Image 1 (cartoon, rainbow, N blue to C red):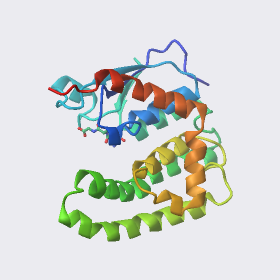
Image 2: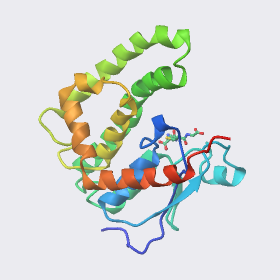
Image 3: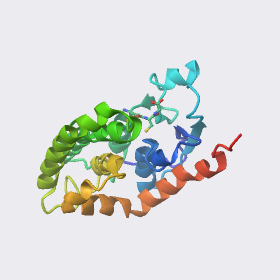
Image 4: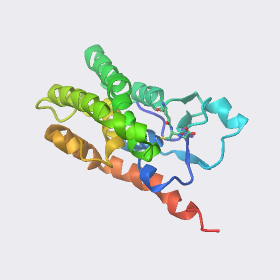
Length: 224
Ligand SMILES: N[C@@H](CCC(=O)N[C@@H](CS)C(=O)NCC(=O)O)C(=O)O
């Protein structure tokens, strides 16, 4: 089973974001999955510097990106969108019950057990970098993040991908690990660094990155 290539898929994304966020915006996850299966899509671009309007909030209640619409379903949350795509294409999520639920489990683990720890570091380093309280809290946050990364590294063991076969779980986990690419934390875990690199070297990842970055140059704010 696969998606009809004529399906008109729309995803929401931003016209432009500051440097630290370029290549990191969460529509990357959806673009990457769609590129893996060669599925065309259109990115509907929004101005990240302005609040999203009520119409957009009908699509994504928090005003965030990504949101997704294929004419059949409209949904939001990158995890839900990846699961929806995985349901429709075996290349994104294997079919046997054990493998399918392991994939689902790892995708949720990426979002729920790993991403919050890493986003705490991002909050302190980027969004609150000039605050004394953030500097004071960072060592404890780093310890927690590193403990989670050590467990993840152990679980990867000798595997290339989380469930053996590349899947939406890896799309989610690799993009979660990339959240802290402004640090060298991942380099402290060579298996994770190699895993992240394996993901980033996939041609579909590179096409997704190029597609996300393309509008940024065009919409770069000009000095007044
Ligand atoms: N849990 C959401 C998070 C989405 C999210 O954080 N999107 C960010 C960009 S990566 C965003 O739209 N930020 C702008 C805002 O929050 O106003 C998902 O995974 O889809």
